[in-house]
Image (cartoon, rainbow, N blue to C red; front, side):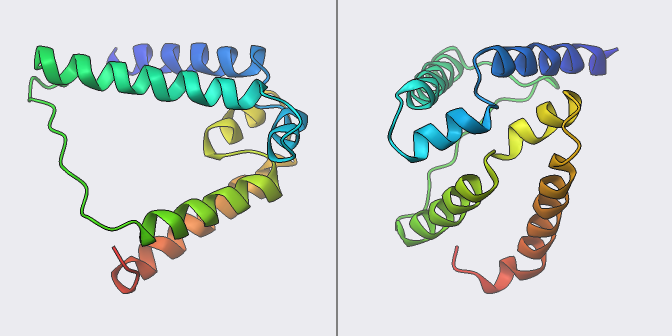
Length: 137
């Protein structure tokens, strides 16, 4: 029964991203060409929502679904890994035209060519798992 609420939230999230055109390749292209504010606005709303949500969790000491406290650990100092990771993520996003979340939404909408992107994401995740001990963290 718990799975049902996660599926419902996933469907609503997919509908919101589709209706806001956040999964549109053209909108993503406009963003990377600095031709439109649309996607930057969506990203800023997401960041703001995340900041507010984390503050609510911290201040009200909200627990997870199993009743355990939600803990946030501090990041290790250094920005090199974030720059490299962000660069790789951004290049992949710009080349493919979608980030990982919309892959599933586009597949659900019937864009079967996104299976190639999905396969690439799986291969990239697998390679990271294999190489993560050799990468700077």
